Amino acid sequence: MTQKHTAIFDPGNSSESVELPVLSGTMGPDVVDIRTLHAKSGMFTYDPGYLSTASSSSKITFIDGAKGILLYRGYPIEQLAMHCDFMDVCYLLIHGELPNNAEKITFDHAIKEHSMLHEQLVRFFSGFRRDAHPMAVMVGVVGALSAFYHEAMDISDAVHREQSAFRLIAKLPTITAMAYKYNIGQPFIYPRNDLSYAENFLHMMFSIPTEEYKLNPVIVKALERILILHADHEQNASTSTVRLAGSSGANPFACISAGIACLWGPAHGGANEACLNMLEEIGDVSRINEYIKRAKDKDDNYRLMGFGHRVYKNFDPRSKLMRETCHEVLNELGLHNDRLFKLALELERIALEDEYFIEKKLYPNVDYYSGIVQRALGIPTIMFTAIFAMARTAGWVAQWSEMISDPEYRIGRPRQRYIGEEMRDVPSEFFRK
Ligand code: ACO
Image (cartoon, rainbow, N blue to C red):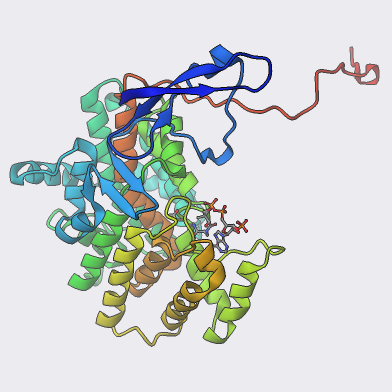
């Protein structure tokens, strides 16, 4: 990050103006470095929702929301989705370069080596209510990994950090599939090393002791794409949560558990589940206009789930790819006439032509299509966000590790604009002694 020039901050009262450095990155907007602002002016900046705040310097993911560009380590998401598999992408996010053949074999092997859970951790599941939401189980079980790997949790040791990252990427599919099996009361299915990451997950989700799940290449390819498209997305809410939790020196398992908790919210990763629930609620093509009307009504806080994005105000390149996969899967599986899929496609068409959505640049986001694809793959709605968490773990561990090795890293500690009572005395009638 190089210093370009300076920006003048003029408080506008009798205080003197303050000169601040302006830093530029490789791409994207310059940033005003306000670290000395408080010391120089006594003021804080105020930015709820971080609309204008860069929280860190990062080399991992770049987004240009206006142009619809998403790069992992400089590579366009479209090229990665077309030509690479999820293991390539995990390696890329963590190490900064795509793996050559030998590196790929070693990495694949390392991930497979860690895919089983300790049997005592498997017993942890039985403490949950039998109908617990899989995301609730994941928050708990991923956090509980902290209790199993004391010997390799020195966050200042790069080897330990890498080992934790591998463990998390490897164990997330096992934990995710077990959360599902527990929810439906079927026995856990253990991982298989002869399968790819996506194949193994489908095997653990859908095999039963009496019958092996038959892998369909169309379904495997679609899942692989979901994983790649959701692997990282710059400083979004859950990634920022992972970084903030990690900034205190907390262990990586606890940090990723915090990220999963944040992702669960319907304004973030929970949108794909919320979107399918919305489609179920709408129920029929004839009722779409009623719901569009509600979404447009200023006095109604109802929103169309799966529409809009904080960063992409043009189009989200992931949505384009997911849309393509969506149509591919529906065609391949002969589902275009299914009630819910027909409804989803019609809602997409109507919203894309509606003035309100056009004017506010509200396009279907990646979660809109990923929910539909996952349903077509036979994945139950309750698992959608859990699968998002499984994919995003790759980005979270890469971002966490980058932060810990950044010499500029400090504990995250925002300040506030206080709007409470001014200093006052406790009234005498409340004196207890
Ligand atoms: N339906 C109807 N109106 C909407 C929608 C929507 N889905 N999204 C935004 N708007 C409207 C808002 O009411 C607002 O209108 P106003 O200017 O008249 O006040 C305007 O569009 C801008 O919306 P903001 O809330 O300011 O946009 P913000 O960037 O803060 O929010 C968000 C983005 C949270 C994604 C929002 O669009 C939303 O809630 N979408 C539905 C949930 C969803 O799909 N989330 C998934 C995001 S993608 C992901 O996490 C992977």
